[in-house]
Image 1: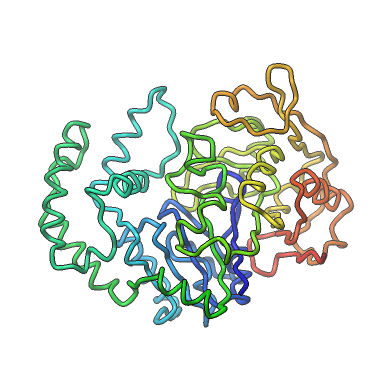
Image 2: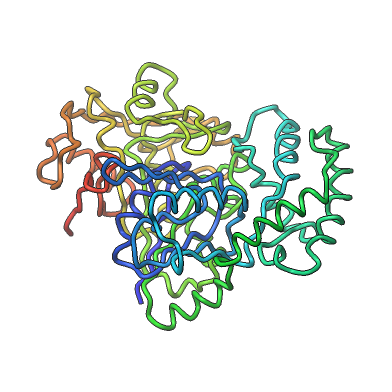
Amino acid sequence: MAGTCVIGLQWGDEAKGKLVDLLTPNFDIVVRYQGGANAGHTVVVGENTYKLHQIPSGILNQGVVNVVAPGVVLNPRTVLEEIDGLLSRGLPLEGRLMLSDRAHVVMPWHAAEDAAFDKSTADGENIGTTMRGIGPCYRDKVGRSHAVRLGDMLRDDFQQRIACIVDFKRGILAALGGKDAELDAAAIFQDYHAYAEKLKPYIADTTAYLLDAVEDNKRLLFEGAQGALLDIDHGTFPFVTSSNSSGVGVSSGSGVPARWVDKVIGVIKAYCTRVGGGPFPTELNDETGEHIRVEGNEFGTTTGRPRRCGWFDAVAARYTARLSGVDSLSLMMMDVLSKLPEIQVCTSYEINGERTQQFPSHVDDLRSVKPVYETLPGWREDVTGVRRLEDFPKAARSYIARLSELVEQPVAFVSVGPDRAQTVFVEK
């Protein structure tokens, strides 16, 4: 049985969706195992562009089952919008999409809590939330008492459960000055009961399904969301997401033991981006940073927010590659750097006058680092038509080789554009 996982090694937005879509024909099942609608995976097929937030990126390939596992938090309304959008474009979903009955549900009060809590950060710096209620939903999941799972929506006591939770949430939101302090339990039940009826054909015990699948030697592809530097336990806390977005979250989110995952592909951009607040050692607040933003169309798939841009950080990427148990790399967005005369790569950090290649565990220490750069020549040639490694300009090949050396993993794929065809398969 071949279990492969695709993990972003930076702060998200590494073009994981393209790689998952590209790899899907080699697998029987694609599994999304954490995150929520705060993820935005874009897949381009010819003239068609698909923006997926909760449904796995393997859905565009026929004959492959796509599973949303228990570690994901789902917004039923947006899931239905995504389903309707795919159906309207002629993509059949019957027998190809499964939603875990254990997945937790984003409810109307969560977005209001998101906004209220975000305003209360000690130093006023936004942690980067998409304001979609993802964090508060995970908070309720851990708190247990006021959580709602997808399977709960199909049970006879669902209306009573909503009424009890709303009574509690009204008090919380009123104390926080939230806009939705006057929640209507009856209206919420009516809406979510209707969602449940529409989603019912897709809801299943995905844990049992996946355990049966691995025992039947099915080939599984696990799709991570966000990036490893946003991992709740191992990322740049508190400027992180609310789930384990590094490789360590695969088993807990999917229910599949780690022994069934035998390959991990780490996805990196040829540069770095970040959304929201938090330290970013290699950030470029200059014309070069703006050039990368425009050339790379670095605006959020989910929010449309402009992303912060900077040079590639090899210290951070090596850390997350080790954390996620990476076997190989997929280097994305190489075409974005094509017009630059020279390119810098952060090879180490300087902290209090001493150099290190260790990634700091505390956000304040990361803020204080001085990146140590190595300057490499640019290639200043259009590479969007390149399909073989040997056809890259010499400087581009040297850049690929240097990143591989610094992260200490081989590069298996190089992307030179958004389309499926714009991918170089590196032979090893």
